[in-house]
Image (tube, rainbow, N blue to C red; front, side, top):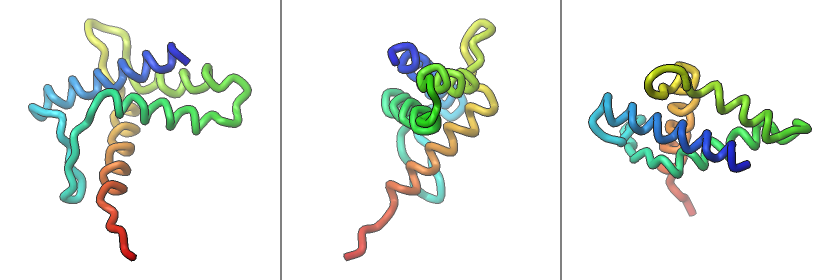
Length: 106
């Protein structure tokens, strides 16, 4: 599990680094709702999602690692998030922002 967590940490840090490089900060917005992308929270979400996705597999950790490794390109001078990785992370962020904006009606 430690290897899986380290990979998720690297993906999250790489995503936030690229986001800051492109936008100048770590804030994202969707439908008027904005929030900050925090690496340790993104990493935790990545691990939770892949573990949930492979819960039926015999070797959960290996299967989860295979899913996560597709999100990052580790070849080259510095790590880059793959196009697939950007789609996955942006989807997670949109879902998080939409869920954080729900009103409680009593």
